[in-house]
Length: 99
Image 1 (cartoon, rainbow, N blue to C red):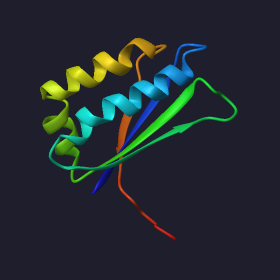
Image 2: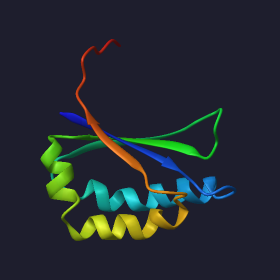
Image 3: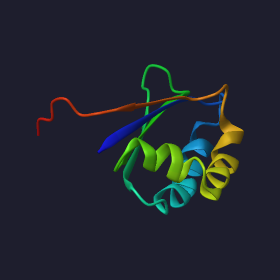
Image 4: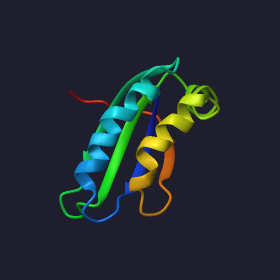
């Protein structure tokens, strides 16, 4: 399993609309084989910063299965209008997990 970490800066005064768009758009992400779960977080100190954490079976499930699918275009069409600049996306593996 890998975690996609997508860091977004959202247009000022559009934070609630962005969160609603993510809720709507995640149906397209979750339809992708290899999707496991998703969680959206929002910075307390910087309210226009959101971090989306998506668990995938593999990096390829995200980079090929999702990013090269029609679902990616649907997703970006829903959430993209709220971006204030391009998101930063990385992949990570768990090193330590503690309940």
